Length: 155
Length: 245
Length: 42
Image 1 (cartoon, each protein chain N blue to C red):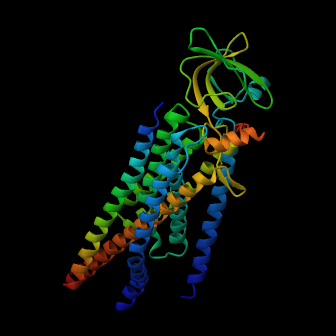
Image 2: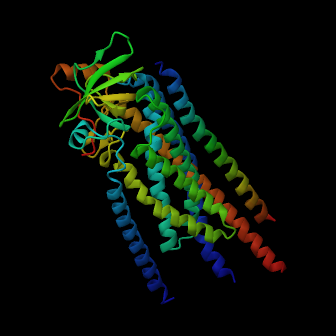
Image 3: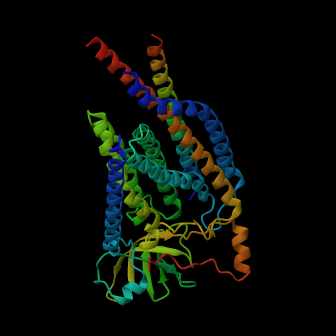
């Protein structure tokens, strides 16, 4: 019986050591993944290190207020995606998701063109973490509290 | 002769008595709260200013996510205490939680997908949050599989417990995936600093979450009772065999 | 886009799947406890 507490303590120390090693491994892995695990690049990232023209990437940011223009064909739209560092004009032909609107987040899959704008093949709407009834949103908008918070750019 | 038997059974039997007393109340309260929460989510809570009616999927999706994460943490703690203290119930607790946790992880993934289509415009993307949540579901399945894989029950529990403990690395990854990396999934709405969910939507969510939690607990207790009964039957069969042999 | 089918599907799963799991838990528990009780009475 006398030997049991030490055996127990040994197991506890072993388990704690294992937990510590695992925690460190987790932190190292996440730091290593930091770059490759990003789902999209913000306009600022693209301005800082321009991608190869024609290479498929994902662009994410806010649709700039007043920037959406519909082409006469009724399918093509042009708009500007921005973050707090840069802006990038985007062209997209297709049906936009319901939540696609000015001031809201968007993730576009496509590529940079030689002309310096972004040609999107797919649009996804990204919303923020705020949930509220419409009348509250209207009241806040009227009260001068814009609801558009910057999307999570991971920075 | 009788002493080791008594020692091994005293704890599970006392636990079983408690479980028998608590199960019906947990079940009753859980079903009541869940019913009220989901009713409020469907009919009393307002639509969202941006998403419209589809925001109601939150009342199923978010509690499932919380329970999948919390259940995993509970399972890993049970696995750890099985290794450290050799508590006779800890391995059974791992086995009891695993399928329930897997169920809620699955509900979280599927309802998230159903919610994603009308809001984001896609059923699925491989961003940090969705991918790490899928990994959680697979970890649950792995734990279940390993327990049943091994002919030797104790060995199966040991290996499954090890996977459960290692898998806890994934929990902070899920939690912070939306902050560390760019993701399609939005950051957390409910933080220590407050809630970004309007009060009219928050109370049905909390009601539903509490209901799901109590239901989760009731199901885990029932599975514990099932496993304890199974263990007793096995021990009895062994004793009979030993007597006859 | 009409959201109703999505909401119905999500609530159907959120109620149906735990409901099925609950019934399975109750059946398994009854079966296991009845068996041990029966054996111990022998």
